[in-house]
Length: 170
Length: 360
Image (cartoon, rainbow over all chains, first blue to last red; front, side, top):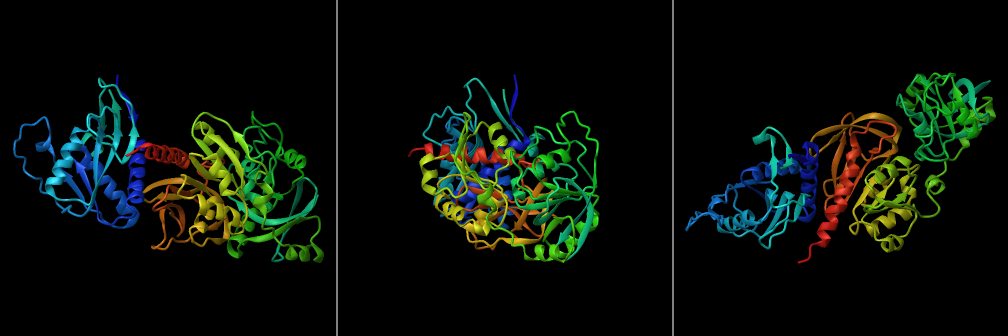
Protein backbone atom coordinates (compact mmCIF):
# COMPACT_ATOMS: atom_id res chain seq x y z
CA UNK A 1 0.00 0.00 0.00
CA UNK A 2 1.35 3.41 -0.96
CA UNK A 3 0.48 6.53 0.92
CA UNK A 4 1.40 10.12 0.13
CA UNK A 5 2.75 11.49 3.41
CA UNK A 6 3.80 14.88 2.03
CA UNK A 7 2.22 16.42 -1.05
CA UNK A 8 3.70 19.18 -3.18
CA UNK A 9 2.40 22.02 -0.99
CA UNK A 10 3.49 20.36 2.24
CA UNK A 11 6.94 19.76 0.75
CA UNK A 12 7.21 23.40 -0.31
CA UNK A 13 6.17 24.56 3.14
CA UNK A 14 8.65 22.24 4.85
CA UNK A 15 11.54 23.53 2.70
CA UNK A 16 10.42 27.10 3.33
CA UNK A 17 10.44 26.57 7.07
CA UNK A 18 13.85 24.87 6.98
CA UNK A 19 15.19 27.88 5.04
CA UNK A 20 13.91 30.32 7.66
CA UNK A 21 15.34 28.15 10.42
CA UNK A 22 18.74 28.02 8.73
CA UNK A 23 18.84 31.83 8.58
CA UNK A 24 17.63 31.97 12.19
CA UNK A 25 20.14 29.46 13.59
CA UNK A 26 23.05 30.63 11.49
CA UNK A 27 22.32 34.20 12.63
CA UNK A 28 22.44 35.44 9.07
CA UNK A 29 24.15 34.22 5.95
CA UNK A 30 27.78 34.70 6.88
CA UNK A 31 30.07 31.98 5.52
CA UNK A 32 27.12 29.78 4.70
CA UNK A 33 27.63 26.95 2.22
CA UNK A 34 24.87 24.48 1.40
CA UNK A 35 25.98 21.00 0.49
CA UNK A 36 23.51 18.57 -1.08
CA UNK A 37 24.08 14.84 -0.80
CA UNK A 38 23.48 13.21 -4.13
CA UNK A 39 21.00 12.61 -5.65
CA UNK A 40 17.86 14.18 -4.25
CA UNK A 41 19.71 16.01 -1.50
CA UNK A 42 21.30 18.13 -4.25
CA UNK A 43 17.90 19.16 -5.60
CA UNK A 44 16.66 20.04 -2.11
CA UNK A 45 19.87 21.99 -1.42
CA UNK A 46 19.37 23.96 -4.64
CA UNK A 47 15.80 24.77 -3.66
CA UNK A 48 16.94 26.04 -0.26
CA UNK A 49 19.60 28.12 -2.04
CA UNK A 50 16.95 29.58 -4.37
CA UNK A 51 14.75 30.43 -1.41
CA UNK A 52 17.55 32.28 0.35
CA UNK A 53 18.26 34.18 -2.87
CA UNK A 54 14.60 35.25 -3.17
CA UNK A 55 14.51 36.32 0.44
CA UNK A 56 17.85 38.00 0.97
CA UNK A 57 18.97 38.86 -2.58
CA UNK A 58 22.21 36.97 -1.93
CA UNK A 59 23.48 33.93 -3.77
CA UNK A 60 24.69 31.31 -1.32
CA UNK A 61 27.05 28.67 -2.76
CA UNK A 62 25.26 25.36 -3.25
CA UNK A 63 27.57 22.39 -3.66
CA UNK A 64 26.92 18.80 -4.71
CA UNK A 65 28.58 16.02 -2.74
CA UNK A 66 29.02 12.42 -3.81
CA UNK A 67 30.03 10.41 -0.77
CA UNK A 68 29.64 6.97 -2.35
CA UNK A 69 33.31 6.07 -1.90
CA UNK A 70 33.07 6.81 1.80
CA UNK A 71 30.14 4.48 2.45
CA UNK A 72 30.76 1.66 4.92
CA UNK A 73 29.16 -0.88 2.59
CA UNK A 74 31.73 -0.18 -0.17
CA UNK A 75 35.19 -1.63 -0.33
CA UNK A 76 37.18 1.36 -1.57
CA UNK A 77 40.31 1.20 0.52
CA UNK A 78 41.60 4.67 -0.41
CA UNK A 79 38.64 6.95 -1.27
CA UNK A 80 39.47 10.02 -3.35
CA UNK A 81 38.66 13.25 -1.46
CA UNK A 82 35.76 14.98 -3.28
CA UNK A 83 36.51 18.07 -5.36
CA UNK A 84 33.94 20.60 -4.18
CA UNK A 85 32.98 23.59 -6.33
CA UNK A 86 33.43 25.91 -3.32
CA UNK A 87 36.08 25.57 -0.61
CA UNK A 88 34.48 24.69 2.71
CA UNK A 89 37.36 25.34 5.10
CA UNK A 90 36.23 27.81 7.76
CA UNK A 91 32.67 27.82 6.42
CA UNK A 92 29.33 27.12 8.07
CA UNK A 93 28.14 24.11 6.13
CA UNK A 94 24.55 22.96 6.01
CA UNK A 95 24.44 19.39 4.77
CA UNK A 96 21.15 18.57 3.04
CA UNK A 97 19.66 15.15 2.38
CA UNK A 98 16.20 13.86 1.61
CA UNK A 99 15.73 11.08 4.18
CA UNK A 100 17.56 10.46 7.44
CA UNK A 101 17.35 6.77 8.41
CA UNK A 102 20.26 4.81 9.89
CA UNK A 103 22.63 7.78 9.67
CA UNK A 104 25.18 5.84 7.65
CA UNK A 105 24.90 8.02 4.54
CA UNK A 106 25.41 11.13 6.64
CA UNK A 107 28.42 9.53 8.33
CA UNK A 108 29.91 8.93 4.89
CA UNK A 109 29.06 12.50 3.84
CA UNK A 110 30.71 13.89 6.97
CA UNK A 111 33.88 11.94 6.29
CA UNK A 112 33.88 13.09 2.67
CA UNK A 113 33.42 16.70 3.79
CA UNK A 114 36.22 16.43 6.31
CA UNK A 115 38.47 15.00 3.62
CA UNK A 116 37.65 18.00 1.42
CA UNK A 117 38.37 20.66 4.04
CA UNK A 118 37.88 21.81 7.60
CA UNK A 119 34.52 23.54 7.99
CA UNK A 120 33.90 25.79 10.99
CA UNK A 121 30.64 23.99 11.62
CA UNK A 122 28.41 21.40 9.95
CA UNK A 123 24.66 21.32 10.47
CA UNK A 124 22.29 18.73 9.05
CA UNK A 125 18.99 19.46 7.30
CA UNK A 126 16.72 16.62 6.15
CA UNK A 127 13.28 16.67 4.59
CA UNK A 128 12.23 13.47 6.37
CA UNK A 129 13.50 11.92 9.58
CA UNK A 130 12.14 8.36 9.70
CA UNK A 131 13.98 7.17 12.81
CA UNK A 132 15.95 3.91 13.33
CA UNK A 133 19.35 5.53 13.76
CA UNK A 134 22.34 3.19 13.98
CA UNK A 135 24.86 5.98 14.59
CA UNK A 136 24.88 8.94 16.98
CA UNK A 137 23.67 11.41 14.35
CA UNK A 138 20.77 13.83 14.67
CA UNK A 139 19.43 16.52 12.35
CA UNK A 140 19.36 20.24 13.12
CA UNK A 141 16.56 21.00 10.68
CA UNK A 142 13.75 18.56 9.95
CA UNK A 143 10.96 18.97 7.40
CA UNK A 144 8.85 16.25 8.94
CA UNK A 145 9.33 13.45 11.42
CA UNK A 146 7.66 10.32 10.12
CA UNK A 147 7.79 7.35 12.49
CA UNK A 148 8.18 4.22 10.38
CA UNK A 149 8.64 0.49 10.67
CA UNK A 150 11.91 -0.87 9.31
CA UNK A 151 9.93 -2.84 6.75
CA UNK A 152 8.44 0.32 5.31
CA UNK A 153 10.01 2.43 2.59
CA UNK A 154 10.06 6.21 2.38
CA UNK A 155 10.56 7.73 -1.04
CA UNK A 156 11.14 11.41 -1.63
CA UNK A 157 10.28 12.41 -5.18
CA UNK A 158 11.31 15.71 -6.72
CA UNK A 159 10.03 17.24 -9.95
CA UNK A 160 13.55 17.67 -11.38
CA UNK A 161 14.13 13.89 -11.32
CA UNK A 162 10.82 12.14 -10.67
CA UNK A 163 8.51 14.64 -12.43
CA UNK A 164 6.48 15.08 -9.25
CA UNK A 165 7.02 16.63 -5.82
CA UNK A 166 5.85 14.28 -3.11
CA UNK A 167 6.94 11.93 -0.36
CA UNK A 168 5.45 8.46 -0.32
CA UNK A 169 5.40 5.74 2.27
CA UNK A 170 5.23 2.21 0.92
CA UNK B 1 -37.30 58.32 6.36
CA UNK B 2 -34.61 60.61 4.95
CA UNK B 3 -31.20 60.53 6.64
CA UNK B 4 -27.78 61.91 5.88
CA UNK B 5 -24.21 60.74 5.92
CA UNK B 6 -22.18 63.82 6.80
CA UNK B 7 -18.42 63.75 6.25
CA UNK B 8 -16.00 65.91 8.19
CA UNK B 9 -15.11 67.88 5.05
CA UNK B 10 -18.74 68.97 4.78
CA UNK B 11 -19.79 66.58 2.01
CA UNK B 12 -23.30 65.20 2.50
CA UNK B 13 -24.64 61.94 1.10
CA UNK B 14 -28.42 61.65 1.40
CA UNK B 15 -30.16 58.31 1.79
CA UNK B 16 -32.95 56.43 3.54
CA UNK B 17 -32.84 55.28 7.13
CA UNK B 18 -32.81 51.59 8.01
CA UNK B 19 -31.76 49.65 11.07
CA UNK B 20 -31.97 51.54 14.36
CA UNK B 21 -33.20 55.14 14.12
CA UNK B 22 -30.47 56.81 16.13
CA UNK B 23 -27.82 59.34 15.25
CA UNK B 24 -24.21 58.20 15.28
CA UNK B 25 -20.66 59.41 14.71
CA UNK B 26 -17.47 57.54 13.92
CA UNK B 27 -14.64 57.01 11.50
CA UNK B 28 -15.92 56.06 8.05
CA UNK B 29 -14.31 53.07 6.32
CA UNK B 30 -15.29 51.38 3.08
CA UNK B 31 -15.55 47.64 2.62
CA UNK B 32 -15.34 46.61 -1.03
CA UNK B 33 -15.97 42.87 -0.85
CA UNK B 34 -19.06 41.57 -2.64
CA UNK B 35 -19.77 39.18 0.23
CA UNK B 36 -19.19 39.18 3.95
CA UNK B 37 -21.36 41.92 5.45
CA UNK B 38 -22.27 39.83 8.49
CA UNK B 39 -18.61 39.02 9.19
CA UNK B 40 -17.59 42.67 8.73
CA UNK B 41 -20.38 44.05 10.91
CA UNK B 42 -19.47 41.67 13.74
CA UNK B 43 -15.69 42.04 13.26
CA UNK B 44 -14.19 43.93 16.19
CA UNK B 45 -11.52 45.43 13.92
CA UNK B 46 -14.23 47.91 12.94
CA UNK B 47 -14.89 49.07 16.52
CA UNK B 48 -16.16 52.66 16.56
CA UNK B 49 -16.31 52.83 12.77
CA UNK B 50 -19.13 53.36 10.31
CA UNK B 51 -18.79 50.78 7.54
CA UNK B 52 -19.77 51.72 4.02
CA UNK B 53 -20.33 48.73 1.73
CA UNK B 54 -19.52 49.57 -1.88
CA UNK B 55 -20.94 46.45 -3.51
CA UNK B 56 -24.30 47.72 -4.88
CA UNK B 57 -26.66 45.40 -3.04
CA UNK B 58 -26.45 44.18 0.52
CA UNK B 59 -28.53 41.93 2.72
CA UNK B 60 -29.58 39.24 0.23
CA UNK B 61 -28.80 36.33 2.54
CA UNK B 62 -29.85 37.94 5.80
CA UNK B 63 -28.09 37.12 9.03
CA UNK B 64 -27.38 33.53 10.07
CA UNK B 65 -26.08 31.79 13.16
CA UNK B 66 -22.78 30.63 11.60
CA UNK B 67 -21.09 33.78 10.35
CA UNK B 68 -20.73 35.87 13.48
CA UNK B 69 -17.17 37.02 14.14
CA UNK B 70 -18.09 38.20 17.63
CA UNK B 71 -21.17 38.00 19.82
CA UNK B 72 -21.85 41.72 20.05
CA UNK B 73 -21.00 44.02 17.15
CA UNK B 74 -19.04 47.15 18.08
CA UNK B 75 -19.48 49.21 14.91
CA UNK B 76 -21.23 52.57 14.88
CA UNK B 77 -23.21 52.43 11.65
CA UNK B 78 -23.78 50.85 8.24
CA UNK B 79 -24.00 52.60 4.87
CA UNK B 80 -25.14 50.69 1.80
CA UNK B 81 -26.42 51.15 -1.72
CA UNK B 82 -29.48 49.09 -2.40
CA UNK B 83 -31.01 46.95 0.31
CA UNK B 84 -32.73 43.62 -0.29
CA UNK B 85 -36.18 43.84 1.26
CA UNK B 86 -36.61 40.11 0.79
CA UNK B 87 -33.98 37.90 2.33
CA UNK B 88 -33.65 34.52 0.70
CA UNK B 89 -31.27 31.94 2.08
CA UNK B 90 -31.85 28.66 3.90
CA UNK B 91 -29.58 29.72 6.74
CA UNK B 92 -31.14 33.18 7.19
CA UNK B 93 -32.63 33.79 10.61
CA UNK B 94 -33.43 37.47 10.17
CA UNK B 95 -32.93 40.33 7.76
CA UNK B 96 -30.01 42.73 7.96
CA UNK B 97 -32.49 45.46 8.92
CA UNK B 98 -33.91 43.40 11.81
CA UNK B 99 -30.40 42.57 13.02
CA UNK B 100 -29.26 46.20 13.00
CA UNK B 101 -32.44 47.23 14.85
CA UNK B 102 -31.93 44.57 17.52
CA UNK B 103 -28.30 45.61 18.03
CA UNK B 104 -29.19 49.33 17.99
CA UNK B 105 -26.97 50.09 15.01
CA UNK B 106 -28.19 52.77 12.62
CA UNK B 107 -28.07 52.26 8.86
CA UNK B 108 -28.34 54.35 5.73
CA UNK B 109 -29.41 52.92 2.38
CA UNK B 110 -29.85 54.17 -1.19
CA UNK B 111 -26.53 55.97 -0.97
CA UNK B 112 -24.39 56.51 -4.06
CA UNK B 113 -21.61 54.31 -2.73
CA UNK B 114 -19.52 54.60 -5.90
CA UNK B 115 -19.29 58.36 -5.45
CA UNK B 116 -18.55 57.76 -1.76
CA UNK B 117 -15.69 55.42 -2.65
CA UNK B 118 -14.14 57.89 -5.08
CA UNK B 119 -14.47 60.67 -2.56
CA UNK B 120 -12.67 58.76 0.19
CA UNK B 121 -10.06 57.26 -2.15
CA UNK B 122 -9.19 60.81 -3.25
CA UNK B 123 -9.44 62.70 0.01
CA UNK B 124 -8.49 59.97 2.47
CA UNK B 125 -10.02 58.64 5.68
CA UNK B 126 -12.67 60.79 7.29
CA UNK B 127 -14.83 61.03 10.34
CA UNK B 128 -18.54 60.94 9.54
CA UNK B 129 -21.96 60.91 11.12
CA UNK B 130 -25.39 59.53 10.33
CA UNK B 131 -27.93 62.26 11.11
CA UNK B 132 -31.58 63.11 10.55
CA UNK B 133 -30.66 66.64 9.51
CA UNK B 134 -27.57 68.23 7.99
CA UNK B 135 -27.70 71.67 9.55
CA UNK B 136 -24.68 73.69 10.73
CA UNK B 137 -24.83 72.08 14.13
CA UNK B 138 -24.43 68.60 12.62
CA UNK B 139 -21.45 69.79 10.56
CA UNK B 140 -19.80 71.40 13.59
CA UNK B 141 -20.37 68.29 15.64
CA UNK B 142 -18.58 65.95 13.23
CA UNK B 143 -15.68 68.38 12.78
CA UNK B 144 -15.26 68.51 16.55
CA UNK B 145 -15.41 64.73 17.02
CA UNK B 146 -12.27 63.25 18.54
CA UNK B 147 -11.79 59.62 17.56
CA UNK B 148 -10.99 57.49 20.60
CA UNK B 149 -7.62 55.84 20.91
CA UNK B 150 -8.67 53.03 23.23
CA UNK B 151 -10.66 50.77 20.91
CA UNK B 152 -8.61 47.71 21.86
CA UNK B 153 -9.29 48.14 25.57
CA UNK B 154 -13.00 48.40 24.71
CA UNK B 155 -13.13 45.10 22.88
CA UNK B 156 -10.33 42.95 24.31
CA UNK B 157 -11.52 40.38 26.81
CA UNK B 158 -11.41 41.66 30.39
CA UNK B 159 -10.64 38.23 31.81
CA UNK B 160 -8.59 35.33 30.58
CA UNK B 161 -10.65 32.38 29.33
CA UNK B 162 -9.81 28.95 27.95
CA UNK B 163 -10.85 27.36 24.66
CA UNK B 164 -9.85 23.81 25.58
CA UNK B 165 -8.61 21.19 23.18
CA UNK B 166 -6.04 18.40 23.26
CA UNK B 167 -3.16 19.76 21.20
CA UNK B 168 -0.51 22.44 21.51
CA UNK B 169 -0.87 25.05 24.22
CA UNK B 170 -1.42 28.42 22.58
CA UNK B 171 -1.87 31.81 24.20
CA UNK B 172 -3.93 34.25 22.17
CA UNK B 173 -3.42 37.91 22.99
CA UNK B 174 -6.84 39.36 22.25
CA UNK B 175 -6.62 42.75 20.56
CA UNK B 176 -10.08 42.27 19.04
CA UNK B 177 -10.20 38.58 18.29
CA UNK B 178 -12.38 37.15 15.52
CA UNK B 179 -14.21 33.87 16.12
CA UNK B 180 -12.68 32.40 12.99
CA UNK B 181 -9.15 32.73 14.38
CA UNK B 182 -10.17 30.60 17.36
CA UNK B 183 -11.92 28.22 14.97
CA UNK B 184 -8.74 27.79 12.90
CA UNK B 185 -6.78 27.02 16.08
CA UNK B 186 -9.51 24.60 17.23
CA UNK B 187 -9.38 22.82 13.88
CA UNK B 188 -5.72 22.18 14.63
CA UNK B 189 -6.58 20.97 18.14
CA UNK B 190 -4.81 23.86 19.88
CA UNK B 191 -5.54 24.20 23.58
CA UNK B 192 -6.05 27.95 23.71
CA UNK B 193 -5.96 30.47 26.53
CA UNK B 194 -7.23 33.87 25.48
CA UNK B 195 -5.62 36.72 27.43
CA UNK B 196 -6.40 40.45 27.65
CA UNK B 197 -4.28 42.73 25.44
CA UNK B 198 -2.46 44.25 28.42
CA UNK B 199 -1.41 40.97 30.05
CA UNK B 200 2.05 41.31 31.60
CA UNK B 201 4.76 38.91 30.44
CA UNK B 202 4.93 37.18 33.87
CA UNK B 203 1.42 35.81 33.37
CA UNK B 204 2.44 34.37 30.01
CA UNK B 205 5.58 32.87 31.55
CA UNK B 206 3.39 31.15 34.16
CA UNK B 207 1.18 29.65 31.47
CA UNK B 208 4.33 28.68 29.55
CA UNK B 209 2.60 28.17 26.19
CA UNK B 210 4.02 26.35 23.15
CA UNK B 211 3.27 29.45 21.08
CA UNK B 212 1.58 32.84 21.09
CA UNK B 213 -0.83 34.32 18.58
CA UNK B 214 -1.40 38.07 18.56
CA UNK B 215 -4.75 38.83 17.00
CA UNK B 216 -5.99 41.53 14.69
CA UNK B 217 -7.97 44.37 16.18
CA UNK B 218 -9.12 47.97 15.88
CA UNK B 219 -7.44 51.34 16.27
CA UNK B 220 -3.93 52.70 16.41
CA UNK B 221 -1.15 50.21 17.25
CA UNK B 222 1.01 53.01 18.68
CA UNK B 223 -1.48 53.31 21.55
CA UNK B 224 -0.77 49.71 22.64
CA UNK B 225 2.32 50.46 24.71
CA UNK B 226 1.66 47.66 27.21
CA UNK B 227 1.26 45.03 24.51
CA UNK B 228 4.44 46.28 22.81
CA UNK B 229 6.37 46.08 26.09
CA UNK B 230 5.07 42.55 26.80
CA UNK B 231 6.05 41.47 23.33
CA UNK B 232 9.58 42.83 23.70
CA UNK B 233 9.96 40.74 26.84
CA UNK B 234 8.56 37.47 25.48
CA UNK B 235 9.82 37.39 21.89
CA UNK B 236 12.51 34.77 21.52
CA UNK B 237 11.10 32.70 24.37
CA UNK B 238 8.06 31.43 22.47
CA UNK B 239 7.13 31.05 18.80
CA UNK B 240 4.94 34.02 17.87
CA UNK B 241 2.45 34.51 15.04
CA UNK B 242 0.84 37.92 14.66
CA UNK B 243 -2.03 39.04 12.44
CA UNK B 244 -3.18 42.51 11.34
CA UNK B 245 -2.94 44.87 14.30
CA UNK B 246 -0.68 42.26 15.90
CA UNK B 247 1.63 42.65 12.87
CA UNK B 248 1.91 46.37 13.61
CA UNK B 249 2.58 45.68 17.29
CA UNK B 250 5.44 43.29 16.45
CA UNK B 251 6.85 45.81 13.95
CA UNK B 252 6.76 48.58 16.57
CA UNK B 253 8.28 46.29 19.21
CA UNK B 254 11.20 45.72 16.82
CA UNK B 255 11.84 49.38 16.15
CA UNK B 256 9.99 49.84 12.87
CA UNK B 257 7.48 52.59 12.14
CA UNK B 258 4.00 51.77 10.90
CA UNK B 259 2.02 54.44 9.13
CA UNK B 260 -1.66 55.24 8.95
CA UNK B 261 -2.87 54.59 5.43
CA UNK B 262 -4.25 57.55 3.51
CA UNK B 263 -7.24 55.41 2.63
CA UNK B 264 -7.95 52.48 4.95
CA UNK B 265 -7.99 49.10 3.26
CA UNK B 266 -10.94 46.80 3.88
CA UNK B 267 -11.04 44.48 0.94
CA UNK B 268 -11.04 40.85 -0.03
CA UNK B 269 -9.11 39.31 -2.95
CA UNK B 270 -6.00 41.42 -2.62
CA UNK B 271 -2.97 39.86 -4.28
CA UNK B 272 0.00 38.98 -2.09
CA UNK B 273 3.30 37.42 -3.12
CA UNK B 274 5.16 35.13 -0.77
CA UNK B 275 8.73 36.21 -1.45
CA UNK B 276 10.51 32.96 -0.64
CA UNK B 277 8.53 30.80 -3.09
CA UNK B 278 7.19 33.57 -5.36
CA UNK B 279 3.77 32.00 -4.77
CA UNK B 280 0.74 34.22 -5.16
CA UNK B 281 -2.24 34.13 -2.87
CA UNK B 282 -5.41 36.16 -2.60
CA UNK B 283 -6.08 37.62 0.80
CA UNK B 284 -8.61 39.55 2.86
CA UNK B 285 -7.17 42.74 4.31
CA UNK B 286 -8.58 44.86 6.97
CA UNK B 287 -6.66 47.72 8.39
CA UNK B 288 -5.83 51.37 8.69
CA UNK B 289 -2.11 50.87 9.26
CA UNK B 290 0.66 49.60 7.02
CA UNK B 291 4.40 49.16 6.67
CA UNK B 292 5.94 50.53 3.47
CA UNK B 293 9.42 49.02 3.74
CA UNK B 294 11.78 47.29 6.11
CA UNK B 295 15.28 48.80 6.27
CA UNK B 296 18.13 46.43 5.40
CA UNK B 297 19.70 46.64 8.87
CA UNK B 298 16.48 45.57 10.61
CA UNK B 299 16.19 42.23 12.37
CA UNK B 300 12.96 41.69 10.46
CA UNK B 301 12.99 40.02 7.07
CA UNK B 302 10.32 40.79 4.46
CA UNK B 303 8.38 37.62 3.61
CA UNK B 304 5.20 38.88 1.92
CA UNK B 305 4.73 41.78 -0.48
CA UNK B 306 1.68 43.44 -1.94
CA UNK B 307 1.70 42.93 -5.71
CA UNK B 308 -0.30 45.98 -6.76
CA UNK B 309 1.40 48.56 -4.56
CA UNK B 310 4.58 48.95 -2.54
CA UNK B 311 3.88 47.53 0.86
CA UNK B 312 5.29 44.92 3.20
CA UNK B 313 2.51 42.54 4.18
CA UNK B 314 4.51 39.91 6.01
CA UNK B 315 7.78 39.61 7.86
CA UNK B 316 9.73 37.25 9.98
CA UNK B 317 12.36 37.85 12.61
CA UNK B 318 15.80 36.91 11.31
CA UNK B 319 16.96 35.30 14.52
CA UNK B 320 13.82 34.47 16.52
CA UNK B 321 10.76 32.29 15.82
CA UNK B 322 8.46 35.25 15.16
CA UNK B 323 6.38 35.87 12.04
CA UNK B 324 3.56 38.23 11.20
CA UNK B 325 1.22 39.10 8.34
CA UNK B 326 -0.77 42.25 7.71
CA UNK B 327 -3.70 40.39 6.16
CA UNK B 328 -6.31 38.00 7.49
CA UNK B 329 -5.24 34.38 6.85
CA UNK B 330 -8.38 33.18 8.62
CA UNK B 331 -10.43 34.82 5.82
CA UNK B 332 -14.10 35.11 6.91
CA UNK B 333 -15.00 36.83 4.78
CA UNK B 334 -12.66 36.34 1.88
CA UNK B 335 -10.44 33.78 0.15
CA UNK B 336 -8.90 30.94 2.17
CA UNK B 337 -5.59 30.87 0.24
CA UNK B 338 -3.53 31.88 3.26
CA UNK B 339 -5.00 29.55 5.87
CA UNK B 340 -1.83 27.44 5.65
CA UNK B 341 -0.19 30.13 7.80
CA UNK B 342 -1.93 28.51 10.77
CA UNK B 343 -0.24 25.23 9.76
CA UNK B 344 3.05 27.13 9.56
CA UNK B 345 2.43 28.36 13.11
CA UNK B 346 1.88 24.74 14.25
CA UNK B 347 5.05 23.64 12.43
CA UNK B 348 6.97 26.46 14.07
CA UNK B 349 5.78 25.34 17.51
CA UNK B 350 6.55 21.70 16.76
CA UNK B 351 10.04 22.50 15.49
CA UNK B 352 10.68 24.63 18.57
CA UNK B 353 9.61 21.81 20.89
CA UNK B 354 11.72 19.26 19.02
CA UNK B 355 14.72 21.57 19.24
CA UNK B 356 14.24 22.04 22.98
CA UNK B 357 13.91 18.28 23.48
CA UNK B 358 17.26 17.57 21.88
CA UNK B 359 19.77 17.27 24.67
CA UNK B 360 23.48 17.23 23.99
